[in-house]
Amino acid sequence: PKAGKQLRDSARNSVAVAIVFIMLYLAFRFDLRFAPGVVIACVHDAMVVIGVFIIFRKEITLSTIAAVLTIVGYSMNDTVVIYDRIRENLSKHRGKSFSDIINLSVSETLSRTILTSGATMLSVIPFFIWGTGIIKDFALAMVVGIVAGTYSSIYVAAPITEWFDKEMTKGGGSKPIAKGATPALVLTKEV
Image (cartoon, rainbow, N blue to C red; front, side, top):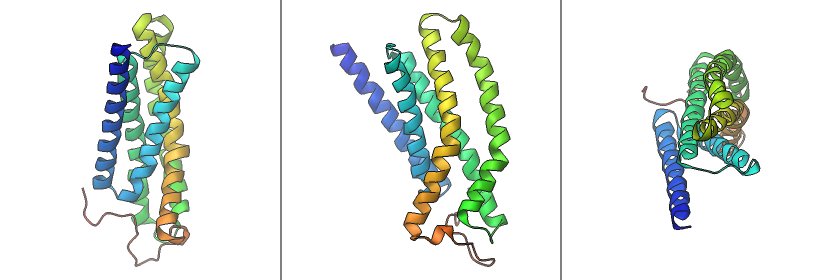
């Protein structure tokens, strides 16, 4: 029981520290308004993987925690690609509303997201099919996490970013951006 408690505490702390650093990175890289979408998407992905392990009554080991942290990084990377496109489209399409820009950006990056997830899935599935023990559990976590990460980048992170922008600007995020105005979500300095 003592080793199990230590593993649980270490796993919880490592995922929490990873998510805090992700939020700091995104606040620096983009804008603070983008951070909640990624954090919620990453927490979603971690919870889906752990939930599948609980449903199938699989043991959560250190390799499972490594897979969860890998999925958090994978999902964040996928979401950052979409956010980069949103930021790029904010300056290109100043007459469109923020929700239209998000929709356009997700549509433009959809093929890249599917191809990347598919290629990663092709490399993980053989480990799941022919692997044994810890490798099979790691591959299961990766397969579930890749599906959840792809889903959350499109259907969780982007809509939460739109909602958060509307809440922060009290409806200003849904109005078209004027041609000469600076978009609310664009950094003042380029990184």
